[in-house]
Length: 132
Image (cartoon, rainbow, N blue to C red; front, side, top):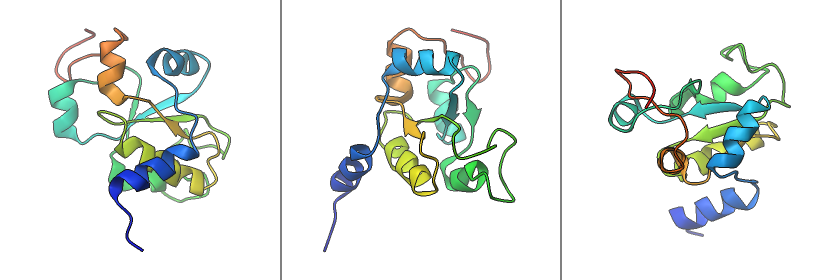
C-alpha cells in the first residue's frame, strides 16, 4: 500500500491536539517547552522564537527521549509538554507524532508553525539581532 505525504501528515495530526500561536504562547507561560526543529539556514532566513530550544529534526527523538543516553537536561520524563515548531506546521506534525510513539504523550506541534506565530505578533528575533 502506498501512502502519500498528505495522508501521512493527516494521520499524524489525527492524534495531536495542535495549539495555535496564542494557545501555544499561553502553554509556554504555563511550562510547556517549544522545540524549533528548523535547519539553521531556515532559522537565519525567517527568525527565531526567543526561549525555544533549537533541536534540528534529524536528532529530535534522541534528544527528547527521557530514557536515552543523548537526551537534553529538559527531557526529564514522559510527561513533559513539548510543542514542536517548524516553518509552517507540516514537518512538526510528523515529528510530534513520532515523539508520541516514544511515549511522550504531551508532545504536539504548533498549528501554522513559525509563520503563524510571527503573523500573530508574538515575540520573534532575527538570528543576528534581538527581539522584533
